[in-house]
Image 1 (cartoon, rainbow, N blue to C red):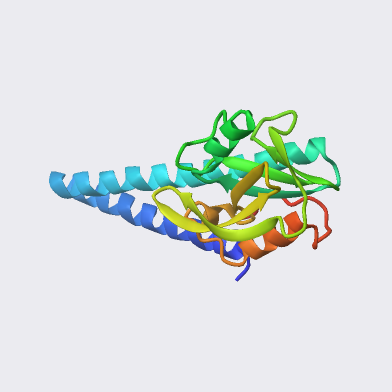
Image 2: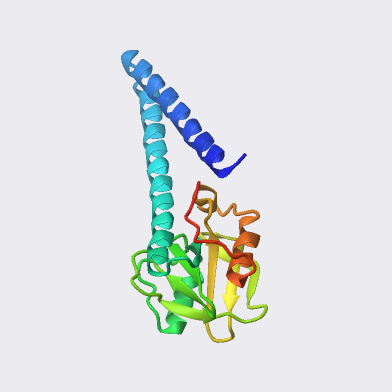
Length: 202
């Protein structure tokens, strides 16, 4: 099942659950069962919040990658979400961590240039800092994302670093379920994969 099919499945499940909850809410209200109606109403509200949050996350990470790609046409752009380590890394670099949540989960893009990796925020007009590309400078390891550790990609040159949860499939990445995307991002950041820029999928 590809990313588009999975996204369609997720959306379909939300729609089905939402329609069922709306139907039950209507029936319970008509029957005067206020407690049951309150329960279904609360479930509908939660579903709406979850759907809006997922939609917003998908659009933000895709927009962040597209913004970086506009300034670096033709370069490989790896979309991702920040981890809890990123605000501290930004401070260490004397760079801005503006817009990045302390627990991770904010959109970030890393642009692969010939000699360095550029770290871009969502609406930046220039990179926040750069990491020099070095042999064996890109690794895969755990990083703090929300309240747990998830697979992530690290790049470092001895002085600067960047760490992200790759978000080629943002809906899965929001939950930290990145699977083989970590290896894909590591390969692209290492320069072993040479393609045009990537925008976020589902």
